[in-house]
Image (cartoon, rainbow, N blue to C red):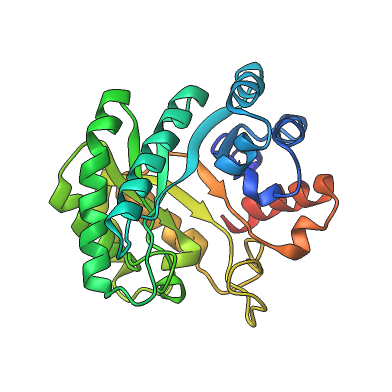
Length: 274
């Protein structure tokens, strides 16, 4: 029992959880604390260059779980929609270079653009970049975001909407990123997780604090809020998910805390609440 409880073999942490550190420092921190998985944000690659980032990750013992992020497809401008597709394909190339099997898609939205139109543009955008994903043998994960982001970050706000796109595209290279912070509130979450089945390609955890002081940068440590993380994880695993459990915490409070203390709190919370 003790051995099982101390199992960190499926723990991964996003580099953005340690936003203010550079990639080399983050990699060293994860290795020091026995964290086996890392999801890399493009910002941490661009800060030092793709070549150096690739070498740092290759020389480490870490498993690169995914790259964040591509997408942002909707726009009233056809030129901007094309730019989004080009940038997403560039992100795919970066994912391939660093050994990430998955590119996370934050699908995008634009104030003033009807949501139905934005969702159609998201479907069109994914279909447009899909041949490049196939050529790289890279998966694309659609991440639904909480409705509070429907104006400018994502018009995909429920797991049902993401499942509908996955069903429409019907490709082995397109699936779902399930983030409990964005989806915990859904009334039909369990049934949509079961519908997604093995199309769940990633599972992100943090917690929803009450009250929250910032809609983006006040996520809680697992156990600090109201999300039934273990229940949602159980549903995902019942549906067939066996991948890494990825900690993704945007928090001014934690970004300002000592990294060694923060990562130990993550490990403690992972064992206790995830």
